[in-house]
Amino acid sequence: MTLEASLREARARLTHARAVTVLTGAGVSADSGIPTFRGADGLWRNYRAEDLATPDAFQRDPTLVWRWYNWRRELIAATHPNKAHDAIVEMERRYEGFWLITQNVDGLHPAAGSRKLSELHGNIWKVRCTACGQVVENRDVPIAILPMCRHCGGLLRPHIVWFGEALDERDLDRSRDAAQSCEVMLIIGTSGVVYPAASLAPLARASGAFVVEINLDPTPASGQVNLSIQGRASDLTPRLL
Ligand code: OAD
Image (cartoon, rainbow, N blue to C red; front, side, top):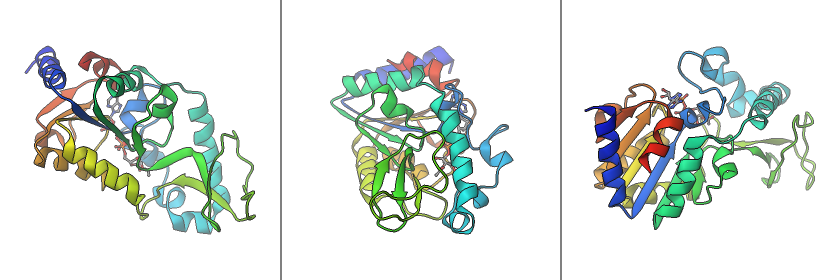
């Protein structure tokens, strides 16, 4: 199928849908200048996730982990939502039943105006106390190392789901509901290798949804979706409207 024919087919499905769920990954923010995790220039090529994004790493060396997050905060603070983020905001306005599930922690979806969303892996602009559990917004760039809780004096950590940690149950339930109840699911810019996020597209498909993937490259999910369209998220997502 040509690119134009694929886009036409996706648009036709969207035109008749009332419930649409979108699942996004780092590829959506790549066009805003934020590095992805996997692939040629991916963060996990140059950094060891087990030294930076696990509870053990934080316990061992919280300063190192906070330095890495400060580097990412600085990088993300200089970026803006792109046309893919904007198109997803427009979809939220258009569809009666809409839910956005993002694995991105950069906060660019809410910055663009998305409100009906689950940030499955947390948000880099939030911190959580390791002692009392309170979550607060913190937009300091850089954040003072080591940051302490104003409430109880405990050590603060990024409010991000690290490897080996469980996702927030409410977010996961809401996301599963959105996957099971939608007529069309769009999966945009994710390698689809991190669970449980990667289980949502098969769940949608098994529940009868038409699943469309947009990605620069083929992924392990490409063979299991109804339509796989290759190209940039910021180019193709607006063309689905
Ligand atoms: P990955 O880095 O694993 O995958 C990014 C995907 O985006 C790849 O499939 C690329 O081909 C695609 N891509 C890159 N640029 C693109 C563009 N301009 N347009 C469209 N697609 C593009 O990122 P995620 O799938 O989001 O977890 O990774 C999932 C999780 O793994 C992340 O949330 C993160 C990471 O460890 C945490 O930090 C908790």
